[in-house]
Structure formats: C-alpha cells, structure tokens
Image (tube, rainbow, N blue to C red; front, side, top):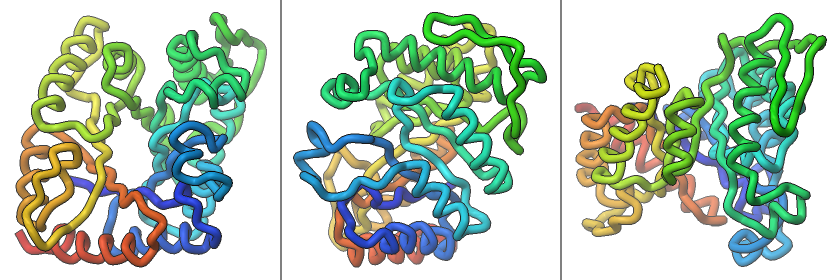
Length: 296
C-alpha cells in the first residue's frame, strides 16, 4: 500500500512556508506522494470555513512542492475541470510533469459548488460533458504528433503541442466522485478512480461497477487503479468513526489498510483537515512511526 498526504494550503494559513514544510516533511517521513485541493473562490462551505483567509492556488503550490522535493509523486485531489480551459491546463500539467521528472498524478472532478461555477462563467448543467471533453482533449494533446479535436466545447487542428509529458502517454488521470456518472467516467476515460471516504462495502460495490462498465466499453477494468482519499488521525483510544475509516488507533488503521489492500486499493491519500500545523505534524509523525515504518 502507498500513502499520500494532502498539504493544508486550503486552510487559511497566513505563512505559505507552513504549507511547504508539510509537503517536505511528507517526503522526509516516507510518504509516497503529496497532494493539493482545488477551489478558486471562497464561497459556500469554503467561505464558511475560511471567510477571507487564503486558499492558495493548487497548481502553484504543487509546483512549489515539486521544486523542493525529489522523490514523492505529486497529485491533485481534485482539479475541477469545468473551471479550467483544457488546452491551457494540458500545457500547465505537461510542463509540471516535465519539470518534476515525471512525478505527476492528475486527479479530476466536475465540482459541486454552483455559486463558484456561476461566478467563473461555467455552465453548471453541462459540467459533466465539459469534464469528459477536457479529459479527451488533454489525452489527445499529450499523445498525438498532430493533435486534433472536434467537440461540443472545443475544436482544433493544424497545431503542435510541446512539451509533452515525461510519462507516456501522459500523467495518470484519476477520476473523483462516486455518482453513477462519475463511475462511468472512470470506466471509460480514467486511468484510475479517486473516491473520497469510501467504506469497504461501498468500495467493493463501486469497484465492481467500474470494472463491469470498463469491460462493456472494451477496456480492461483490472488496469484501473484505485486511490482512496480519507481523513487521518492516529488516536490513543478506539474510534467508531464510520465516516472516516482511517481515524483510530494504530491497530485499527492497520486492519483497515489490510481490508483496502484485499480490495485492490493502490494508495490512500490522507488529510488532516485543520489549520493547526503542530497537530498536522504530530499526526504525520505518528503515522510514519506506527504505520509506514512499523515492522510487519
């Protein structure tokens, strides 16, 4: 099992060095990857949490982390595709993959905050189709010598795209969400599935659905990776938090990890959702000591 860690760039920290430090510590402590969240405006539940405090830009932060690390993979959890021009995004991601020497994972989703969507000029009702087209466009630009595309939102031909990513045919695209539309998007367009807080039961059922849909689409469902995002805390006493299966004692966490491994989960992406930097670092340390480096 691999373990990723999400940096707290979305929790209003005044000192951006605190964000970078958490990412660097993740590499030093033996985590396999570092991840960022993505929103642009403080609206809805983001405003309720932050008010006017900073939510640093996802890809700027990830690039900064990339420049200060050497080994960890770099992930987005998740980029809201309907907020972004896919051609511009393809260029940014390809550049980041090249400059990080092929360390990028691209988690993507469609978004659920209508006020943010409306403010950005994105059409909320078509966000699923826009996301599908965005994935297709990025794959075309990354892999074709003479890319061309004719779609609902974008059309182009007679162009060249460079640089192309170090990873061939491109960075893995991990599709977030667990709705029927999201599962179909994983099965038809994704290299992996990146759900949030999936119980063992839900994960079992949804993974089976993805593999069935992939087979129907002529793809090998067994090649689709599973990377689960969940909240982390290493506690002294037993926990019964069914919403976040990675909250509990070290023994509880090991048992949960074993269950996920049996289901074919490739990586757990872990978040400590707070602006308390000391608490985040303590949790990183406990997890590294009691789980990552604990002899089996």
